[in-house]
Length: 549
Image 1 (cartoon, one colour):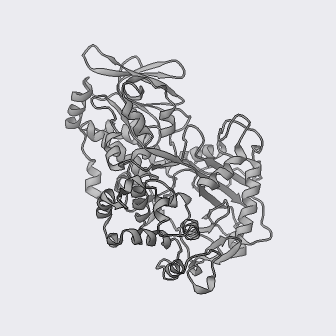
Image 2 (cartoon, helix red, strand yellow):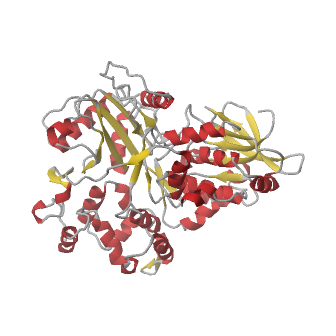
Image 3 (cartoon, helix red, strand yellow):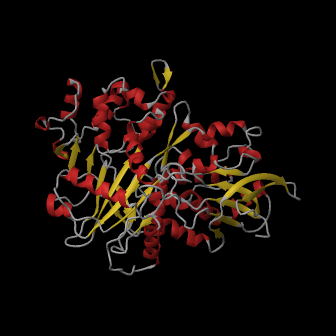
C-alpha cells in the first residue's frame, strides 16, 4: 500500500469486481488511453476495498448443512436470455447454468382467502374476489397468458395504443418522448398513469398476480413500463448450478492474479490532491484511520452507502459539485426480502402435488417458490416479497436501537435453532462459501414460525412438518438500503445513466452499479454502468460480447 494505486475500487459486489476484472485485462491500446487520462506508466495497479467479510454484494448464494450442494439465492438469483453482458460473460467463463421454471399452470393462487389454480384465474367460473369493472372483467377473461396481470399491460396500451408490436429499442425511444395530458411521461408516476385506466381493485389484482408490488408502484413511468415490457413470451430465466456468486468468485480469482482485494475496509471519505506529475489523484480515508492514495476511484457501492459518506471532495462536497447531490437522489431503494425454509420432506408435493415454479398470494408471503423438491428427502421453499410485505417481515428483526439494523438483536430476534443434526460435507470450496453465507444469515425464530403458518394457510393444509433450518435477508438493512432501485419521476434516466458513471467532468472519480442504470433490478444493469465508465476511460466493448451477441 506504500505505492500509489492506479484504481481504488470501493465495493466488492457485481459492478466492483467486474470493473476490476475488465481493467486488469486492458489491451495495450486501451492501457495507453487510460494512462493518458490518469497518468502513470506500466501495468495498472488495481485494488478492491470491500467493507464486509465477503465478495458478492447483493448476490448471496447460500447452502444449509442438510443440502450443501444446492445453492439458494438469498440475493440476486437469475439472469435473462435478453441480457447480453451477463449472458455472454457466462458463456465466456463456461459457468454452468440451467433454465428456471417460474410459472407452472397448476400452482396455487391464494387471494383474499380464496383458493385458485393459476391457470383458471381467467375462467368465468373463477369468480375472483375483486370488484372489477365490466371492462376489466373482459380483459381478464381474454388474457392470453391466463393471468390477470395482463391488466397492467392493457392499461398501458389504452394510453399508448401505438406501442403494440414495438421492439424494445423502439419502445424506449417512444416512451422518452411520450406525453400524457401535455406532461412528459418521465414526470409521471406509473401508479398515477395506471389510475387513468384501472380501478384500484383492478390494480390490486394485477400486482398480486404479477408477484411484485413494485411493478405497479409510482416510480418513473418511462422506466417501469420498459421494465414490465421486458418480459416477453420468449423470455427465459436462468439459474447458476453453483450459485450466482460463483460468477463473481471466478472473476475475483482471475483478477487477483494481478490485483488485490482488501476485506473489511469501510470507506469514510475521499478528497483530491495534486501529485508531483501535475495530475490530480484521490486520497481515500477509511474508518480504521488509514489513508490510501489512487489516481482514480471507482465507487461500486449502493446508493445508500454513497450517501452515507462524508460530504467532502470534488464529487460529494455540495459546494464543489452541487449537481451530484441531485443525481444521487434520482433513484430510490426498493425493499426486497427473501427467506428460505428447509424441510425434511416436501410436504407441498405430498399434500398438494406441487413441485416447481411459484405460487402466489396477497398475504405477506406473496411469492412461494418450490426451490428444491426432492422425493422423501430434504427440500426447500423460498418466500420472496417486496415493499409493504418486506416491512412486515422486517418487523421480526427490529431492535430497540432502530429499524432494519441487522446488528441488533432486540425483541423478535431470537435465532432459529437448526433441527438438523447431520452435517454433510460440501463437495468443493464453493459449497464451503455457500455454507458460511447460510450460517451468517440465520432467520429469527418468530419469523420462521409466522412464515410456516402463512405457507400452511396459502396451501390450505391443516398441518405440515416444521422447518428444520432457515436463512433470510432483508435488503433494506445497512449498508444496502434496498435490494434494487427504481428511477424517481422527473428524471430523464437515459441522460443520468450516461452522466453518473463520471459525474464530474475531468475528475477521475466514477460511480457504477445497478442503481443508476437502465436495467435496474438486474446484474446486467451493474455491468452496463461499468461498461459506460470503462468507455469514458477509453476502453472498448468486450470482444467476447461482440463474439457472442
